[in-house]
Image 1: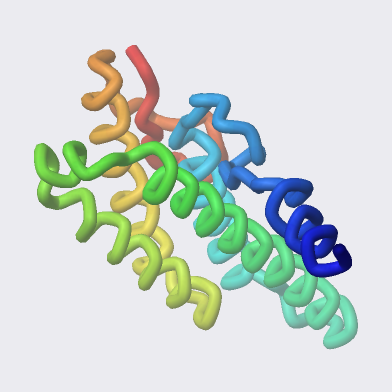
Image 2: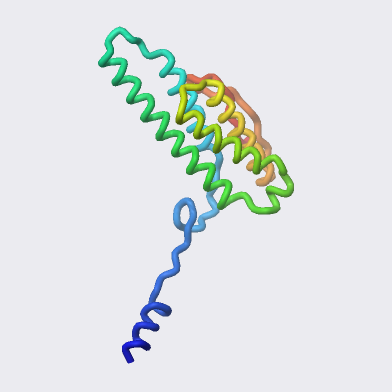
Length: 162
């Protein structure tokens, strides 16, 4: 009897867990968050190169704060890209857009590089990879897109739905 009860508990009363970016397969995906994070990484990198060394304590404080934001945005970007790569894009997308896998790979490598360094070139390359992923995303949705100059202090482009 104990064996039967144990079997029933393990097999009939267990919960199956579904995983998605919001733990509900909602179908809501958008590359905008990744682009915003890439712009923020660029801006934090710019600001890190501009830290004034007038006061050592203030400089250390500013560097710490800017680095924290750059790191958190790098983590957010990685999460956003992982959601798109694993939940939105399907095998047929990778077949139709053969560069897509390379875009994700490059973006992940660049994401690590911008965490480890103060490298504006790597941050700009990261944004470019993210924008190329955004363009493919919009193509798979069958909607027109355009690159526009952002209104952010980075003064770089953003891919948006037309």
